[in-house]
Length: 154
Image (cartoon, rainbow, N blue to C red; front, side, top):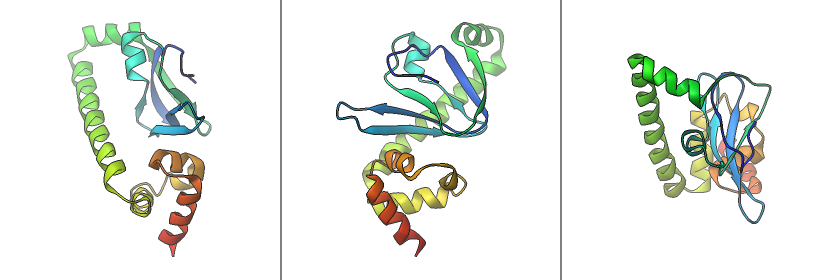
């Protein structure tokens, strides 16, 4: 849907399916930043709002149906609707809180704990995602993820 280096012109709402945002480092390793599912929004905010090259990619992980709005139409909506502004403010607050919790999660738990927490909190996602994507999201290797998942289920 979007490759790094392109400008992200749309804000997506996921009606059905799963998207992820990720970047690839200089060694070619993928790092999944977000996994976005039904009834959630997805964009690369810095690219969308500042009209600069995206530092990340957006990829559909399964057949996905989205609704989207361009930046220009989004700006019109914000200018015309106090309710839309309030909703957007709440979404930004929730996202900021999520990012803080995610950093704490990634830096506070062992690989085994990360896997156990992810599986407990996201049972509906595990069968829909590859082990490689989940490992990338947890910032562990696929091999470590596989081992920890096996330990968690036993």
